Image (cartoon, rainbow, N blue to C red; front, side, top):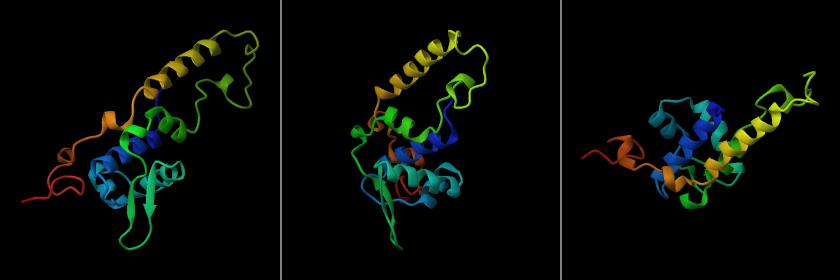
Length: 147
């Protein structure tokens, strides 16, 4: 199983927001910290806000921050919210054309594997993966200010 870039970015955004504490951060700051596209991050922040993981503030002094304490943000729930498709093989997808679907034993095994994969994430919260602001380095928006 491989997570999409979207889910990867979602986890990074949440980690960055958690490291910033209650301070509003911006998409531009986050983009700079991770060297990733602002356009992609806007979509990610939108989804995370719609699912209640982030609070977004519009306007000139706007930005976003966590909507919940890190220990209340379950990683399994985040993955389920950000992954568009868990169809590991054709028979999991709509429009399945596989001729052996009715007798095939593989889907049950793949479903068990997917369930196990997600259950590992269910055991962890954002608090388990949050980084210290120092990791982002001096001068970084979430990092310590240069002296």
